[in-house]
Figure (cartoon, rainbow, N blue to C red):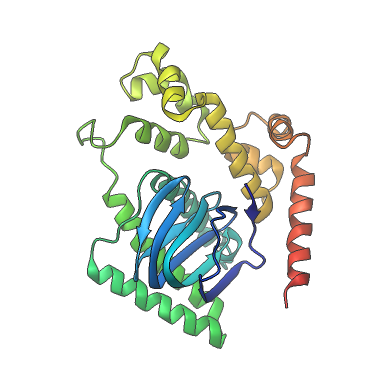
Length: 297
């Protein structure tokens, strides 16, 4: 599967999709897409969702995304990395943004994998469209403080989207069958990826009312891989994203994602990448970004 990185912390453009080929890619950045005209099918992590004029999508880093166009399609794409949203002036604001991004990361990953995010209120659709229109104007004019304004615009859009996602997640008081068990298990894994004690078989068995001997069998049957394989694969994807798009040290990433220490992360990362260490991976990612920037017109 081909991958794509962001050449700048923030990119915005309006384009036609007439030449789009069926070639889903794994992108390493956040992206908001608004369909301005046309019809087709959105591909997200092997799921297929129809789109039409006015459809709004949010993609997170590591989503595999693509489109199958049925009618000529014009769209607005807003792409940004954690680096862009983390350019806050105070440490408190940076911490707030970091935690907020982590929450969005697992919430939207869950919904992009199993269902689409629906904006149910017409007023919210109109608000998002208006905000995106203002972002286009602000980005093209590039007047004083335009980057700060773009940050605020993105925050507003994501808050509206997150509100609709949160409304669709059943509370613990809801009926156990409100959504498939495997969906709730995967969301639990994402939410607790930095808490190894909450990912143990005994904990999961108690949390989801399953026999401890059945947890692993059930997970493999529904996902095609073992629980431990899934957890480590997801962690490695997050490590790659942190290395490519943040200034966190390897030690800080290890601590954040629940590795016992930096050496443990190093060993697992080399297994995942076929021998490439974290520092070498970060160096290669930076070189790739630099080369892409030099090739830009």
